Image 1: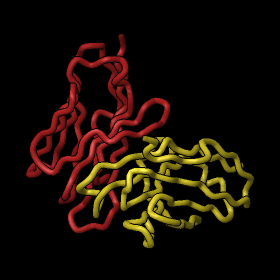
Image 2 (image 1 turned 30 degrees about the vertical axis):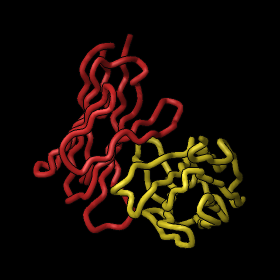
Image 3 (image 1 turned 135 degrees about the horizontal axis):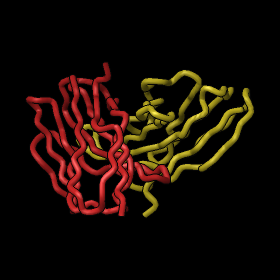
Length: 115
Length: 110
């Protein structure tokens, strides 16, 4: 049981480069999320997908795009990386409609540095 | 003012001590989550509460909706409990977003 798998675990980008963070879950969860975590701050929601075929902006969507490729996969793309996007990124999934009724399963995180 | 506040920010205790971490929030909620972030960075959901009390092993979570307060207790603490404990709430009527606390860093010394 892999749960939520994120790749890569570490990445260094130059300013202006693009990259895609991959996330896949094998728990048949409907909802998937991308968060960023900065030092000393709580998790902040970038984008979420309530169900396959839908995506919505979270608290900090600027500079990011997402794709819910199918029920299993939810990718996060940085089109033109900026130093302010240096952070740890977490993908998560949950079972039901609305995260309030169900717990989350998190990926192991991607540590991204933009220089 | 943060909508979700945790206390203490940092807590160091000896192995075996009873640990309490508090979470206060200022909005009406439909649920409250407690999560654990390991020193290596991984995040694990511990509890989701909408009322009352839940227990799992040595962990107990309580919530008082009227007082807008939740506590996470750890009995017979162990060095492996050392982690950051995070409280997050889902505001009533909101979409999928959770409001996150900043976390409590717990260190249990042998």
